[in-house]
View (tube, rainbow, N blue to C red):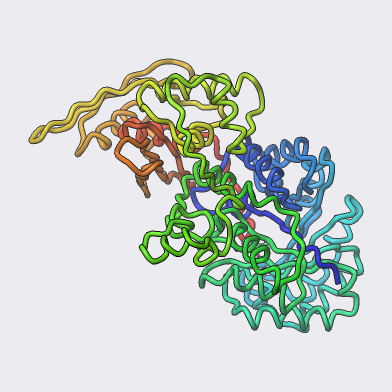
Length: 513
Ligand code: KIV
Ligand code: ZN
């Protein structure tokens, strides 16, 4: 059996299905480029049949990415599969991923199909996909709760039809590591042609065991592909976290003995990019990418690390992209210094125009904040729409607000709507409330705010505030993110960004609907 472990990233598909995590085409493209830099083997770019927006995003990624295989999801029907094939046409290397539910519960209650009907549909779907491409993945949705005899029958048939990867999802995060590992092992032993396909695991984190289950699927079960997402983004409690599973396999190579193609130095950049694009903040104590992941607070630990680093550190911070470069930039820093810092941070901007726009934003920030840290630079390029701001309906211009003890706060905001400058005014419970109501006085979105959070980007009161606003309207949920040293301005930018996303987001078909 091969020692190569395939890393299949589904941040842009399953990750994006997380309520509020929807991304624009340009945001997805930027993340796909970062995943390519990270050298993930397969990028699941989206679900082309779910909406025109998703189709276009998958198409743009397929036309751009050269070093990773680009994959599109489809239900097990000809229309979805054709749509995926069409979106992937320009890819250097592409994969169609088709799925159907196989558990008794899903077949009876959701699909309202008999097991024989599901069997037939799975077989025909793989046959159809295989006529369009040589790389076809088949997933048994809710696989971990499916009957093993039925799974063996379906899997044997789809491998005969040409499926090259067989994925057994733990769709609802119900599995237990040892049981799941043995389940995969038994399937591989019982399916007569199992050696003709690569076996894959796809675990959700409802019981906090997605990483453990994935590793058991590999170690006990013999799977050689792990499906995962940056920061563990995904439906409900999320997917298996890429950074954790990759660093587990790398750090414990003595145990797993598997080869990975991942360039782990780009992990932190990918984590920041995904968090700042979606507004899903990374908790400080999150393994590998949390702010405290390599911080030693206790005196005993600090003393130990100073004497011999491996007393308390099992991986090197710089191996996952943390830098100990403390050089800060300021308003006297030139374009070259800025460009070099971007490079050191692993940020590649597409054109000189994008660098110029980012540099202008940097100068604007440096006029208001004496020291610009790496975190500020990453926020500068990650937050908001694509760097050029193309496609935004609303853009922030300026804000004036007044608040004083014992008086009702007042705000006046100027922003552009479809390129025309408009002004809104309102009072409110506090300056943030007044500013957002001032925007609403003009926009009348009627959206309900379901989350508002503020996070200091670099830890001090001089820091920029990073604000996430989650809005819900007509069954759609979106997150907007804004950053500014003034948290009221950051809040207004986040609100406008969420309104832009509400405007852009088309109705979608859910992958597990
Ligand atoms: O969790 C799941 O079952 C999925 C499939 C569509 C692969 O995401
Ligand atoms: Zn999933």
